[in-house]
Image (tube, rainbow, N blue to C red; front, side, top):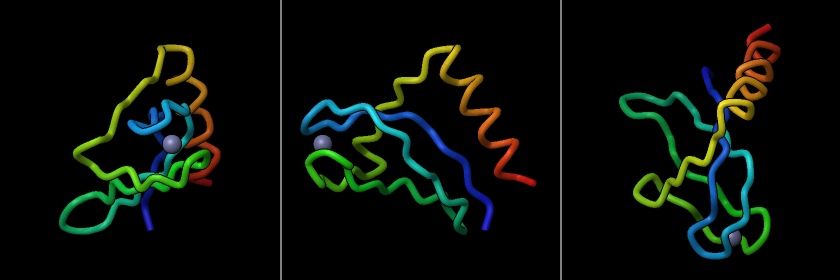
Length: 67
Ligand SMILES: [Zn+2]
């Protein structure tokens, strides 16, 4: 299954973490359990916090993932 990763911030505890977005049909699956407080973060609470440098690193990681 196609997927990519994004860096998000937990709305409950503020923990920054990497979440995997699954490219499910018809919509991508934005669901992630917080690694710190176990809160389930849904698409409506998805807070992207990528800086440009972090985005580059994530793109590199995604490139590796594709191979
Ligand atoms: Zn949390």
